[in-house]
Image (cartoon, rainbow, N blue to C red):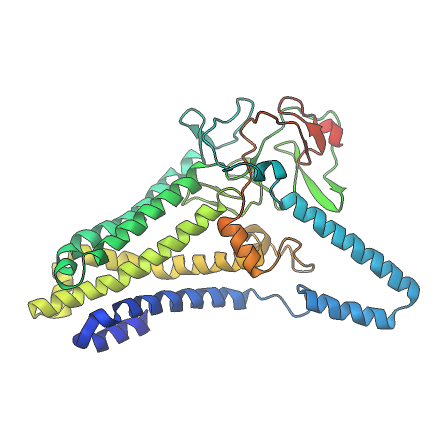
Amino acid sequence: VLFSLSTLFLLFCSDVCSFLFLVFLITYFVSFCFCFFFFLMIRRPPRSTLSSSSAASDVYKRQVSTQSTGVFSADMSRRADDEASVKAKREVDAVPEQDLKLCCAYSCAPVSDEIIPGSSTLLCGDRVLMGPGENRPYMAISLLLATVPSVTFVISTWDRFDSDLNVVASIIPAVIWVAMMVVFTFAATIDPGIIPKCTVKPTATPKLVIVEDGVLYKWCRTCLIYRPPRSKHCPVCNNCVEKFDHHCPWVGTCIGRRNYRFFLWFIHLTFLNSVYVFIFSVIHLVLEADDNNTGIADAIRDNWGTDVALVISFLALLPVGGLAGYHLYLVSINQTTNEEVNDLYKRESNPFTRGCRYNVMEAFCGPQRVSKLVQRKKDVTTDKTTNVEMTMDKSTPEAAI
C-alpha cells in the first residue's frame, strides 16, 4: 500500500489515468502475496516431518538398504496398510456417487421434521438454517462494515470520477458489494454440513472410538453418533459438522463442508473491495485538492464520505488480508483451521491433500455433498456416521457398539 501510494503521488501530476490500473494491481497482489507467504513461512512444518512423498521415499530407500528381509516384508506390509488407510479416508471424505449425479447439491427443500437442529435456527418454512440467535449482533456489524464504505464511496466520488476519470470507477465497489452480499447470504443460511443427531439412547456404554478400514470414527456423547474424520462437535451450534473449520460469529454459523467455499469467496471479495476503495479514495482526495487548488487537508475536511470509506477500508486491509492469505494457505494444503491449529498432521502426513492445484480447485469449484438434513426419496444407505445400515426412521447406535 505504501509503495503504491508513493508511486501514485510521484506520477499523478503527469498522467494518473495511465497508472491507475497498474497501481491497483500492484497493491492488491503485493498485499495478498505478502499475507500468503507470511503465513506459509510461520506455519512451515519442521524438516523432520515426513510430509512430502520425496522425503518418505528417501527414508524408505534407506530402510531397504539397512534392514533385513523380514523387516523389509513387515515394512512393505505396513506401507500397504497405510496406502489402504489413505484410500479409505479419501473415500469417506469424497462426495458420494449419488450426489455427483445431481445437477446441484443445494436445494430449497425443507429440513426433515425428524431432525433436531441443535442451537441453530430454522426460518422460512424450515428451508433456511442459520446459527444461534446470539450471533445476530456480530452479523449486523459485519454487514455494516461491508456496506458503509462501499455506499459512502459511491455517493462521494460519483460526480468527480464522472467528470475526470470514468463513472465506472465509482460503480465497481457497488458491484463487488453485491457479490459479497450474495456469498455472505449463502454462507450464513445454508446447512454447513450438520450430521443428524440420533434420538435413541444406547442401552450399553458405547466405545469411544471405532476403526473400520483404517478410518477412525469418534463417538459424540451429545449427538449419540460416531462422527467421521474431519468432523467436530461445535459447542456453540450444538451440532456435529462435517469437515468442521471453525465457528464464525461474523457469519453467524459454523463454517464446514457445504458453506466453506462461500466463506472463502466472501473474505477474498471483502479484501479486494477494501484495497480498491482505499486506493481510489486517495485518488479522489487528490483530484479534489488539485481541482480546487487547495491542500489535501482541505479535501479531507470537505469530503466526509470519502474519509469514512478510506478509514474503514484501511483498517480492514491487514486483518481481512491476513485472513484471506491464511485460508488460501489452508486450501493449498487441504487442511481445516481446526486441523491446522491443533497440529493434527504434525507427526504424520495429511492423507487428504492431493497437490496444490487439485486442492484449490476442489475448494473453490469442486462437487458438493447433499445436505443430510433433507429427506431424500431413496435414503437407504450404508452410513458410516453410525456404522450401521440405516434409514431416516431406523437408526440404532446399539448396532455400532
